[in-house]
Image 1 (tube, helix red, strand yellow):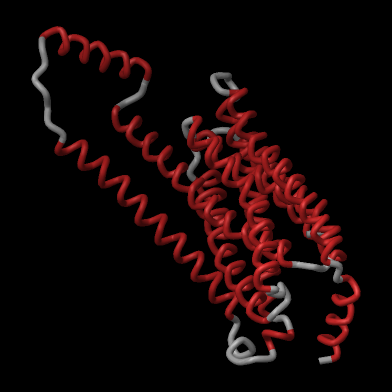
Image 2 (cartoon, rainbow, N blue to C red; image 1 turned 90 degrees about the vertical axis):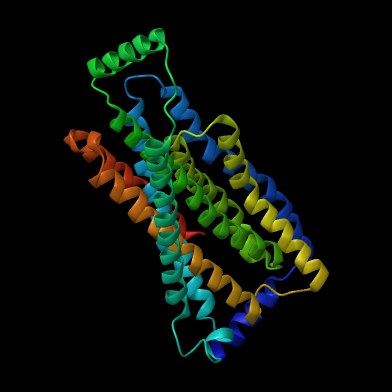
Length: 335
């Protein structure tokens, strides 16, 4: 109880609505700019290397760095913040929050839901390809068309590519696109929580260090998502849309938080706000943990032919993974 009184006194000493609003307006533009830089860098880098001999290796290294960033985001940033919110004295002193570890439960639910989406979407893609292969009508072909198809088949045989390999490559590409989309959903959850929490806060002592820390946070998190988008091979319109959505989510969350506070006077440190922050943070953490370990790290390190055939590439990928997780973990000192 004494800790609660001490925390309340410290918060009241730092409350300054005018100074906090000024810092929020600055943070909106700073975070938007750093988000654009972070998510567009790996996408532009991948386009620069496209068609060059090192393209596949460069994209793989970018993706491994991204996996480290996403893993650290979930385990070092999102999950501890969710546990802290639920274990706050305003929440943990009441039933049922003090009787059961709800943060861990909701994290598990998020991971299981991500698995369900992964299984359902993968099965749908495989069935659609199987249906197209077995039930597509065979058109009547002229002699010229038959000769053209024969030459095309011979050229594929000479280059060592078969129809099965092309179908398998297309399945992998669609799986990568699915991973990028689900990953962005998890990150958007996290970004909205950060933005709304900052927008509702009137504590200038909390907001001031957060502006600089979140700028770096968005750069590395954007690089993580951008690396996955780059490997998925989306078209220009989809890539631009996904980059735009990531860039504006946190600034929009800040604006939403400011509107909520101005209309309702809702305190970001109230019991209900802490419960919502803890549950949404736990849910997004579960999604990000699953995506990082299963769809990013496991796929590349255990099911990637290029990495299996090149020991130096495997070592370089592990170093990139470690660098990504380390860089994002260091930011936990400030945000």
